[in-house]
Structure formats: structure tokens, C-alpha cells
Length: 147
Image 1 (cartoon, rainbow, N blue to C red):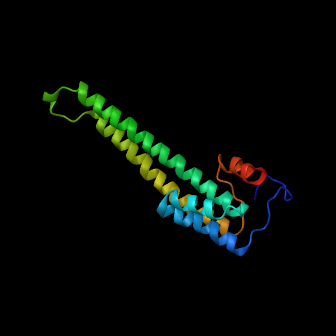
Image 2 (tube, rainbow, N blue to C red; image 1 turned 120 degrees about the horizontal axis):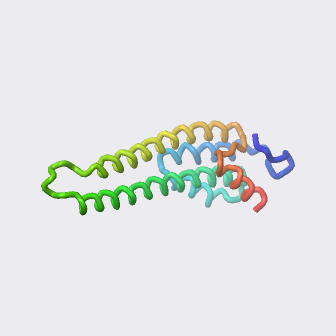
Image 3 (cartoon, rainbow, N blue to C red; image 1 turned 45 degrees about the vertical axis):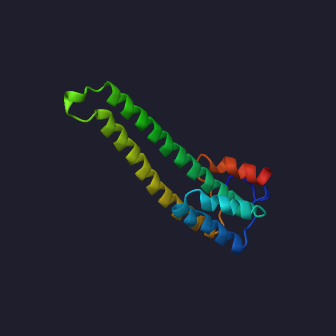
């Protein structure tokens, strides 16, 4: 459960709220940030669904920022290496393989984490738990419950 007391606004959600929270995570696996954003906008009246939608949305934004930032660093490194790499050398620049591999591993690893988090927290949401994703969950719960 959560570190918050039972009377802090955490209630037992209805069956529909549990189902919507489950869908937030399951559809988020396939649609990225779109499904959590749509559920957050449509189901603002439910604190339970809003909490889970914001958690999923925050995770997808962090994941997107990491992958996008990694791609920017990779392209800058590749172009900087190509500009300083002699053309007659015949071998590809090392920065291409190093940064490309690192960004690819981050993207694939994040995709696997996305899948695992989606399944675990979908099951917890379907059981009616106010389960917090580490680091961001507590902050989001305070914002949803206390405004």
C-alpha cells in the first residue's frame, strides 16, 4: 500500500476505476504517453485513475527524454568525430559505434522496463492498490490527493 494514513484521501476504488487504471498501464505499453494522457484528461474526477495515469505519463515522459537526449548526444558525437576523422583512414569512427550502441541499449532497456512496469503496475491497479512507482510515485500521490 502507501505510506499515507487511510484517512488521507486514499479510498477503495470502484471496479470501473480499477479497470481504467489497468488500461492506463496496458495501453501505455503500446501507445507510449498517449493513453495515460487521454485517461488523465477524461477521468479527472477519479483520483485513483488520475494518480495511475499521471504515474504512467511521468514514466513515459522521462523515458522519452532519456532516449531523445541520448540521440542528440549521439548525433553530435558522430558529426564531431566525422569532422575531425581523416577521410583516408578507411575505418568508421569509434564514436559511431560507441554512442550508437549505448543509445540503442538505453532504448531497448527502457522498452523492457516499460513492459515490466506496465504489467506489474497494471496488476496492482486492478487489485485497487495505490502502488507508487519508485522516486516519482510519492510526489504524484501528494499532488493528486492534496492538490
